[in-house]
Image (cartoon, rainbow over all chains, first blue to last red; front, side, top):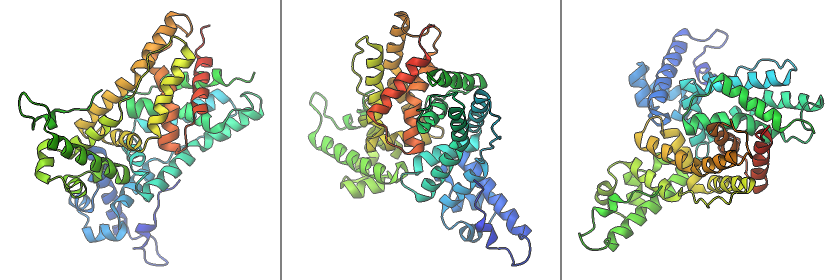
Length: 203
Length: 203
């Protein structure tokens, strides 16, 4: 998933590159929105607060982001660019590596706060609902590829439900971080993967 | 965990029961706050909006709930009174029954929205941080009792970490509901429990 860039493009002159001043304004606005999101949550990311913090004029902000939720969305989408590495074919390694990406994401202040915002707003704001869908789809994509390949190689039970599998891999980390409020270590990730493999070994 | 009742008590006359009119106002305010929470999330639960919807005066609302977050807290705390049943001593049954309580909670509109609000606000609002702690502690309490007893009976690996165990039982349901946006069925609960037991059988 790539960050939506249309808003800043509206200020480009046709046939030339992006306007450097518009790019700077956009970056300053997003940096201010990011700080507000971390400190006080999505509801603090208003046009007024972002203008005061970034020095970018409110008119400019409204032109680029007619709704404040678009600002929050862009902050989150730029940060949560789940960096996947191509699967190696070694099931345990591939699962650990993918899940370690989620672990790092959950320990990054911006994506942690962003994920919480998405979970809270998805039911009531279509901007966040679309973002949640994209994050879930993109976040589980490599897991599904890895699991399918392992099933084909006979390393996992053939009737393993891929949705359940993703829930069982990602769920414990999310719960531990978002609700229990505990740290997720690299060792924890390995235990989750090993327990998953023990439960789904082919019979 | 019981709903905090101090606010309405302030209007009781000493030596008599609660003032019926104050009780009615409190119930009307909480009903309006609940509807707003379901429809638009925690940020819509303001004194102004609750007054308009319930007919309860803003002065009364401010007296009972100086902060709007207290109103949201009371709505959630009244609803999420995780109904535990005493463990029977049959491990699989006890885990399924407890986890089915979480399943029902995740499918109830008020507690679903309340849980999302708690997850989002806990890092930035102490009222929600305390509520999250209480929900986690109370929600995992019976699981810990059941797991301890099973370890003592030799039905689970002796070195099973109870925190990891709770994450592995509750995490998949939370992830499936809050992020994947899928339904959690009773059959799904059984599969999560059976996979958990397969991973943690004593060696």
